Structures are given as C-alpha cells and as structure tokens.
Length: 287
Length: 318
Image 1 (cartoon, chains in turn yellow, cyan):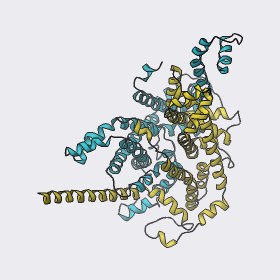
Image 2 (tube, rainbow over the protein chains, first blue to last red; image 1 turned 90 degrees about the horizontal axis):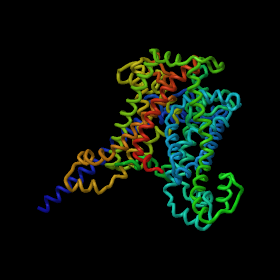
Image 3 (tube, each protein chain N blue to C red; image 1 turned 90 degrees about the vertical axis):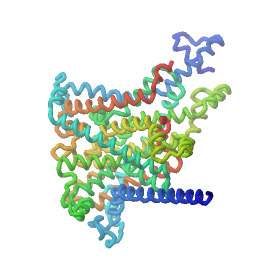
Image 4 (cartoon, each protein chain N blue to C red; image 1 turned 120 degrees about the vertical axis):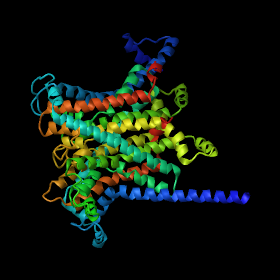
C-alpha cells in the first residue's frame, strides 16, 4: 500500500518536472522568434559594412565596430542623441515638478471639481496625438516655439502629465495620512507636510513617473516629425529617418544608430524591473 | 496659523481682522482645500494650453476651409459631409477596426498564454520574462526600422526564409491583403508584452489558498485555470482590452513607418489618413475632421473604462 502510494507520488513529481521542462522549451522557442527583430538590429550593427544577417553565412564575416565608427565620425548622430537626451530629461523633470503637487491635490483633496479634473486627465490621456498636433503647430509658429527643443519639452510634458498625475496620486495615497496629521499638529503647514513628509517617502513613485515621461519623450515620433525642421534640432527618431533618405540606405549605419536609440530605454527598464514592481495597475482591479 | 488668516481675509473682501478662535478652526479645512487646489493649478494651466485649447481650436478649424498657412473661411459642416461621403474614409475606418480587433484579440491571447505559462512555473522564468517584455520597451521607431528591413525590403531575413522553404516571394507588404496581415502581426508583436505584464501582475495577487483548496479537491491545472484564474481576471481583462483598443486606434508610428498607409491605401488607419490630409494634401479642415472621429472613438472608450473602474465613486464624493 505504502509502496504503491510512494510510486504514484514519484510518477506525479516526474510528470510535474517534465511539465516544467516542456514549458521552458516552448517559451524558449517563442522568445527566440519574438526577439529576432531586436536581435537583428544588434547583429547587423556589428557586421562589416555592407553585410547583413542572412541564413548561415553571418558569422563568417566576423564582427566589427566599423558601422559605429562611421555613424560617430561621419554623421551628426551624437547631436541627435544629445537633443533626445536633453528633451527627455527635461520632460521627466518638468512632469515631476508640475505633476507631483497636482497628484498630491488629487490624493488628499475631496470635491466635485477634483473628481472632474481626474476624469478629464483620464480622457485627455486617451485622445490621439494627431488631433493636438496641428493646432499646436499653428500656435507654436507665431511664438517661435516650433522647431525648438523647448517646444518639444512643453508638448511632451503635457502629454505625460495626465498619466503621471494618476501614478503620483496612487503613490501618495499609499502614504499613511497619520504622518501628515501629526506633523500638522506640530505646526507644519499643508505644503510643508507635502514637502517634508510625503515627497521624501515616495521616491519609487517619483522615479517611475520620471521614467515614464522620459520614455514618452524619447520614443515619440509624430510630434517630432511635425515640429522639427532643421538638422540641429533633430531628435533620434527623425535623425534615423534622414539615414533612409540617402540614395541607397546604408543599413549598417541605420542599425548602429538604432542601437544608440534603444540602449537608454532598455537600461532604464532593467533598472526598473529590478527596483520597482511594474504592472501594479493590474493588481488593483483584480476580482 | 497665520496663513489661514491672511488667506481667508482677502477672500472675504474685508481688511485683515483677527478672527475668533472657533471661526479659525472652522475655516481651517477650507484653507486646506484652497491650498490643495493651488497645488493643482500649474498642471491645470499647462493642460488647458496644450490640451484643451488645441481641441477647441481643432473643432473650430474643422468647420473652416483653411490650410496650414491660410485661415480660410467658415464652411459649416461641409468638411464632415465630405469626409462621411468619402469612400477612403470608410476604408480607413474599416482598416482601423480590423487592426484594432486583431491587436486586442491577438495580443490578449498571446499575453494570456504566456502569463499562464509563467504562473505554472519553469526553470529560468526570471531571466526569460524581462526579455519577453523587450518588444514593448524598445522604441517603436527602432523596431519598425528592423521590421521594415525584415519584411519590407524583399531581401530581409523573412524573405530569405520564405525562399528557403519554397514559398518564393511573399511580398509581406506588397499586396493589400498581405500588408494588412503583416501590419496586424507586427502590432501584436509590439503589444503582447503589455498583456503579459498586466495579466501576470494580476495573477500574482490571486490568493494562493484558492489553488491549494482546488488541488486538495482534485482539480486539474485546466480546472483551476478555468474556475479560479480566468473568472478572477475578468475585470482586469476588460481593462486591458479597452486600453489596447485605445492604443491601437491612436497608433500612428507602427502603421506609418511600416507601410505609410499603403499599398494603395490598404493599411491606412484613421490617424494616418488624418495626417496625410493635413500634411500632404493640405486639406486641414478635412484632416482634422477625420482626427476628431478617431478622438470620439478613443474618448468614448476612455469614458466607458473610467465608469467601469470607478463604479459609484461619483455618488460618494462630497
């Protein structure tokens, strides 16, 4: 009896272990296929100029940084990188500076006006960029904000504010109100409580909003396409496009610049998945 | 507190007089309310200028005949009439619908299957999961550059593959039907990590004792998935569908960078059509009218989702 039971448990464990390896196998196959479009960018960028990933002969070429050297020496890629970095970092900073107080107001305030504001933010977030971009272009031309990095920062900050405010609100709501209350009793003002108690305790929330707005600015194509008209203002997405406009597309150079463009988001994401729990919105509406 | 006095006095329109203690106590929450609203003001100003004003201006311009450089004249609903009686508009609406449904269903099925596999567990899951999120993290301009090379040049890896297995020239982006399928597949590729991320996070919050109880009762994996996981994911699933539908209706770069709306308009979505109308045909009013239709669709879905996520909150708020 015990022997039979023991044998059955063994079979069950074996079947479970086999299941784990079958899942590993299936997921690995899927991952390899799904990562091809990203892998070829990296591999193409380190193949000798003129050579591209193909069948079995890829590795015979050996690897070289010639495409990178070309992109750095012969093109204005560094300028595009610098522009993108300035715009994305400024957007992140501005979104936090303007968004954090608003998030605090929504977290601690009550009233019809604030809940209407919250709905408006949600709605604004969902509207297509195309509808904003034409009026903004017409507004920015007389203000000389078109074709400037400042103009881009203003639009991207406004674009990332709604979701940023929502994220910050839930970060602030997670901080016990008792802390502020006791500070108030000790003579701290409302704004003082926000500055000295709430802000220092919500670093993860502030950082994830900063990251979100950095990525929004870094990845945008449409606004940049409409607002940028001179090479000195181009950010990476538009700079990458100019690489296509040459007589014969130099795919090696395109891929090298694409690697420049994908490194910061991927680095940020690696840091993020290490330190924060992303995807929290899913957990909040289960059931 | 001094702030309370200085703030409440000018509001009352009277000279700053020291008020009795009980009045100050009563007025204190009110002062807090004002200060909280003051904190929100900078964001309100920015969003009015960069959000509300453009929308109002867009509506105004959709009623006029102007272009990007000339203001034009008032034409009433003529732009809307032109758009609604235009076959290209309905073709774009049809493609937008196909693209959106494919993106929602496709990315949900793939994302859910992956999330369930991760939930069941396997060696190396911690390393593989972040890698699978990369298609969502990599800038769309970069991934579309890569896809263009893979399936759009006729010499990419995908073409080589179809030759190797004897299919010959498929022309992934060359014929209308193939282009619609290709663009949808690329969109699913770009979107499934979002589903994996959100559904995976939701699964982690499910009470593990439910599964233990089911196991004790002899439930199979499929049994507990069907009777525990999927029912508990119903709300979050609905949320991801709406969000993905909004993302897809609004998606400009995926379609634009891959096909530019072609071939012969087969993959022209509403936002791509609006863009072309404004910036290539210079019919600003008509282009904006098209964009406003997309806005209405996305906005309607957003309001529906908001109501769904905040049931009854309106009644509770003072």
